[in-house]
Amino acid sequence: MSNRVYIFDTTLRDGEQSPGVSLNANEKLEIARQLARLGVDIVEAGFPITSQGDFEAVKTIAREVRGITVAGLARTNFADIDRAWEALKHADQPRIHTFIATSDIHLKHKLRMTRDQVLEAAVAGVKRAKGYTADVEFSAEDASRSDLDFLCRVLEAAIAAGATTVNIPDTVGYATPDEFAEFIRSIMNRVKGIEKAVVSVHCHDDLGLAVANSLAAVLAGARQVEGAINGIGERAGNASLEEVIMALYTRRDRYGLETGINTEEIYRTSKLVSKLTGMEIQPNKAIVGKNAFAHESGIHQDGVLKERTTYEIMNPSMVGIAHSSLVLGKHSGRHAFRSRLVELGFSLSEEELNKAFARFKDLADRKKEITDHDIEAIVENEIRKVPATYEFTYLHISSGTTVVPTATVGLTRGEDLLEEAACGNGPVDAICKAVDKITGYHCRLVSWGINAITGGKDALGEVTLRIAENNKDKLYMGRGISTDILEASARAYVNAVNKMLHEKNAGAAV
Image 1 (tube, rainbow, N blue to C red):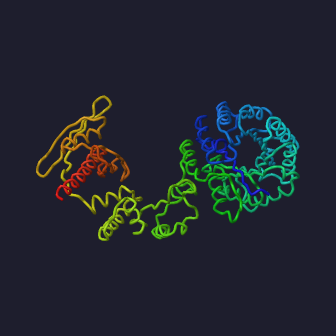
Image 2 (cartoon, helix red, strand yellow):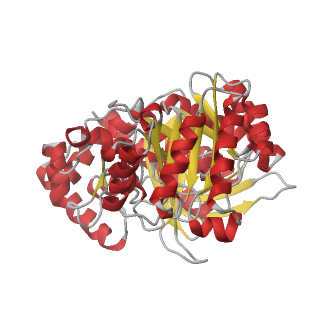
Image 3 (cartoon, rainbow, N blue to C red):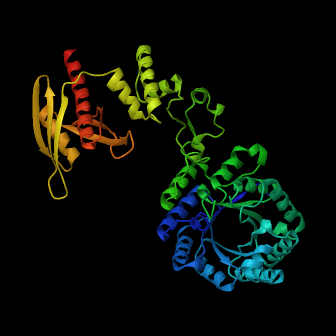
């Protein structure tokens, strides 16, 4: 038996059936191209008979995406199959994927057909598809709840009719891993001619077992796994392909199987699918979640810093993530804090480190996650606080859609109140120009960002920005806090200017 597992991606078909998801043809094409870069073997581009939009999307992907198999879904009726071929005929490697349900519950309540009628329809559908392309996949919908004897009859007939892949779906996520593995083994042993076809599985996640069932099936002899990126799909979704892929890779000792996947494209693919579908990835999602390679516990951080494999069974670079993330919070230890300081370019004495760590712990008790900006602010504004040449006093703003933004700023220097006004292409730009008039220095605003410290309408906003003196590369960070983001911006800008002037004065004194 082959040690190669084929990866069949149905993100664009079953994945798009997720409630609230609707992709246009261009978005589908963008995802399909990324799936090709990822290295999936088959992209199920859609269900052409369902709408003109789906037909056009499948047709576009078939024409534009080369080097991989492009599949279109069709029921076993001839109209579906003909429409699928019309969309797929220009594909580099076309596949018609035809299906009919085989469980008694579907036969009785949905199809209202007898077993003999279903068997006849399956054979006719496969033969019709085979007349268009050599690559035909047959799926027995709701296979895991089907009578095994009848299912084996249908699969045997489909293979005899020309199916090159037979798919065993756990359509409603009903199976458990041990019984699904035994189910697949029984099919492998009982279906005449099974060696002529690739056995595939398509598992849903209604009980949270889609990936486990897929892997159990692979151990039992299945050699194609169907699923979706991020596990999206009908109801609770499909088997998450990135989890299946990395399980096979990480536990090669257990499975001894290979895929053709470029794992370094996994994270990029996941982010693209999330962005275009609007379905956010849960933070604790395996492989691609925000926290998948994040460590906050001091014990874990210390272990990872000493030897990554103490708490990571996968190297994040394998899936396209640059490095692990040490999330600094109240559970973090001194080792992780010192490591982050070094990454940010700070070299502190032991006394400064002690003060900074104590302040960090105090802030972490009040703030869920500490950012790099917070750490920079702790060091620069508190541990290595510079004397203020200018103090912010007041701010007046005139701005709107029909007026030129104008700022009047008042700063004190010693006992003197200094005031200037300036216009800008926005209120923040006007503020910066007014401050520059007062100080006599012209600076570039290199970056600006805001973070809500508290919630509600009266939330405190924290502005963090970086400036550089014109024609110079040295950056100075400023931080300001206010319920008014423009006031916070003014305070942050003045804070950064004070750091620049302190450095200049220190240099002149030397």
